[in-house]
Figure 1 (cartoon, each protein chain N blue to C red):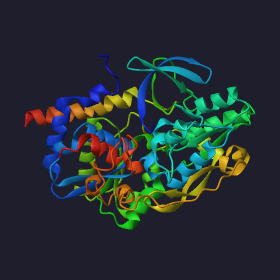
Figure 2: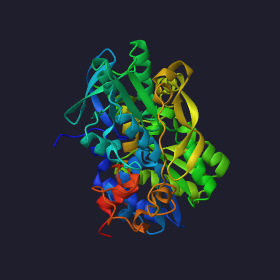
Figure 3: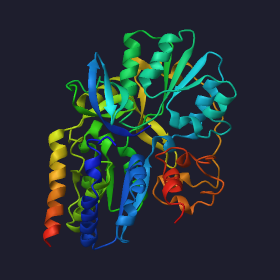
Figure 4: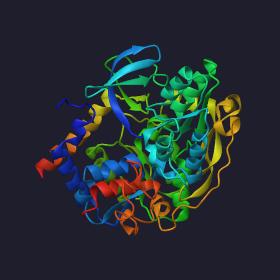
Length: 364
Length: 75
């Protein structure tokens, strides 16, 4: 197999076992750390990290799976758009199986709606370029990692004067949700912070957590030695009573991040109040196209109204996203609810806690 | 969708690059990483390069890990 640079060297078995030994030797108290990013949740279970940790260290999943925190009303809007004759929905694949209140994009596609899976917002713009008589709607989901790509695409649409391209934005920013978790009183001793969000924003966006709440933050990569090294760094912060923002993932993250990506976000989007599954509306946690770009905002150019229905009352997705419960606490988990027949969004996305547990922890 | 992977730049034409993830070829928008050259590694996220990977920092992290490893061997 071809060597994967910047991946394989961080999967070295000896280093992994040595780090695990260090962690066990350093862990003098009980520790609960939250991995905010769904990509971290998936990596932690894929690499079997919990089995390498002593019992007094618990990792809990947070709200960093964009598909999972997107509200049912957003899915309902994409479904409503898909029912229009002149509309093409060009979406990331993750979204199409998320159940709305009465349908999903996958079901709409099966009944004839024009729904296409794209890898990038630029691909959606490409469809608009060739299908001039149709309106192409790109459901923009994702955090600070994905939002700049949507921003670049909207700027490109403006530059080329493409008038049939629209974004339905559910883009979100991470810090307000992390603050909501802390304010709610979820018991945690530190954050395993999202490495790719920080690659864009810089690690400085997390500074308020140690400064205001005394909670340590380690910005972390996605390979097993990255995760273990970060856990060790968090333990040392707790032991030394010295909460701060540290960067473990130094090959991709600096304090200042990527200024060009940040500039694109600032140029196109303005902060808006946004709905998060499990949290409700969090002020200034969303990104909506600003004044110069609002013609590309589907909600402004072609508004739809949807009847919002509550999600399944038994599904505990909303508590899992806040770190209050584990997937196995849900009566639907691995019974009625499975990746083949997901009830809640946490079971749909590959980065969702329920989907990850279903794949790796069902037997336990 | 929300995963980023380290990829090697093969070629750049205008704002788009051809990149390789262990031999699998993708296209990447380079609008946010202007100073990258063929041979450099970048993080690919939803069709865009979102950051350059620092070879020096990557080596530094490994050096630190190996130091831990060696220190523990001695004990």
